[in-house]
Image 1 (spheres, rainbow, N blue to C red):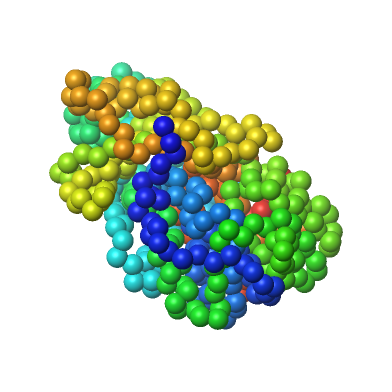
Image 2 (spheres, one colour; image 1 turned 30 degrees about the horizontal axis):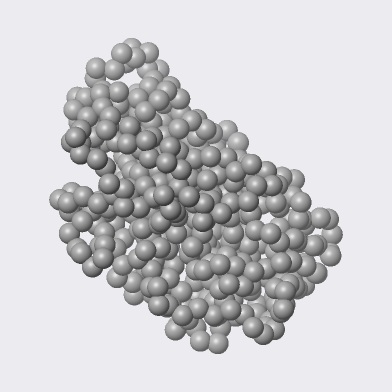
Length: 454
């Protein structure tokens, strides 16, 4: 089975692209034309008067941005309580609020660009099946209450066997409910789910979003913005006041360079102004390959996004599944929902190369089939016809928190990277923060700051 993404399918296949074929000297050079790079360009152009170029080694939005599950969520793939433990209550709360505020930044991009592409927003859900999972989420909610953040809606089955073991400190952070309400929220028939966490979620084709925002930027900022595809960066040389990007036949001199990549490109970074950057940068991210599939069904249900934890445990290292449903037009035939499912992923071994052309493993189809049939009321005699099967490479930082801001060894270099599995809102948030750095603003310390020693 081939790597066939529903998001790339909806892109304009006739769109013209341009490769850099001359020497240029922009104020800011952004490496990577996914949602992080396009968002960074958008805010830098809007809030400064500087010239910006985006460089993409392949094609616009064809990386993780075009190979994701389409979910827009404001959580980290680690609990809020663990952020408090690492960064303290105030810093963790500011970081969490910054990601949640990115909803309005996404709206700003959508409105300014005059987009009319589908963007659904709704209350999404997470299904829990064990006491340990419930405790982790209650502790997150307790920390949110202490921090003054909006609480998540947690309901627990009144039939759960552990009710007498719930600590009193969690009083007021959940409510008891009939098991049927939980299953209705999850749209599931699996009685193993004994609790549900509900909060704002959304879904969007982030590749199509990037394509349309890039078109807007090209029209709105002539002379200040350029997008160059099929333009690989081989080397970045950092000086005291300028960065030189070696593109092979050509070079770019920029006052700032922003890395909005997944961290696994074949380029080197040479810092002529101090300590080494290259080795530490490339060791700061770990690659994971996520696998997803999608099928069409009748358009008779609203958009949704649900995560399912079918096995005990609440660590991000344990398997869970995520499902998105949204209207989807295929081959000019309206009237369908696209139901997509993700969950299995694999660690990319060190020094290994990821290829978008790699076949989709058949074994994951069996995993998806088994999950769908034990979760939903499907016809047992009807085969699930997967129209799309795809995989994508995600960059995970060591602590699961996005890296945003200047490189401590040389602030000419900035980062907006580390999708950590939930990258759309953090990418947009990071783009606004980086634009503030480019504008010369004083930016307060945050949990997203690039650590001096990684």
